[in-house]
Length: 316
Image (tube, rainbow, N blue to C red; front, side, top):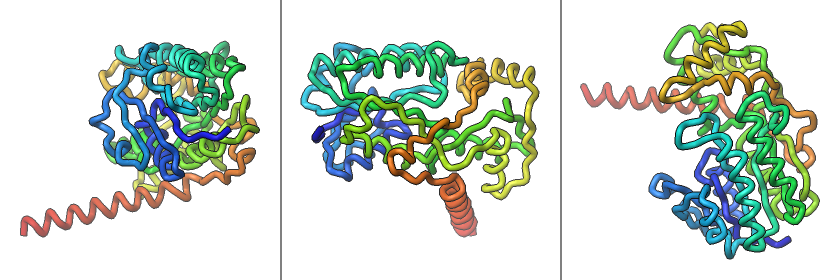
């Protein structure tokens, strides 16, 4: 299946930025759909990339944007609900619209981002159950050549997860953590991007779901303690009992800007670890957190020291 041009949904997000850069540098032409092209000019300057303003949730828009492409990649996902983005619309309904638009335009190849633990029937949270519904919709499209990816938490220098905890740890000597024993196998964003690229023109991956994990499993509390250690900070990370974890989710979920919610708490009831790591099946050796993030945090400390020296010199 020779592919030259790809339409990417969610191409301006965390994983999308890495994947579009990788694919553009491999010579693919890209059409990247976004509601806010003015915010993502770093994508527009990629070789062979076209940044298009489009509402991907409008089913009338998708066929127009898919025409002329050979494949579609759907990376769209949200961790928190707001009035303008609901789990059902983003995770469950959009994949069905993508399938319909692929059929309408004759596109056969579809790569879809799901999540580890996604399950339409048994997912304990709205996030996981709606992710499962979307995965179910694309995998049921037997007339399309579909490959699905189910990663654990994805990390990288520009991620939200590790950097968010780094910020919180700098603000307080004590950090309470909900569900401290929940387990994760963080996977490097470039390994995830490589998995998509590897599968794109590999017919052997069609019809398969690939769980994607890093080489090491961490308890949530251990993971946060490691962030403090990488930052060179002495911090007390306190695991909350279940009742307080629920309360934390309820209170923080009511804030205008969400860091944690009841739905996140419910997602943490399922360990995010692979039963079988798809990276190995795709011939990819996963990178560890320890091989990537300490250098990132060290570089940030160095930049802060340099900026502080410049300010001191300027005042002198």
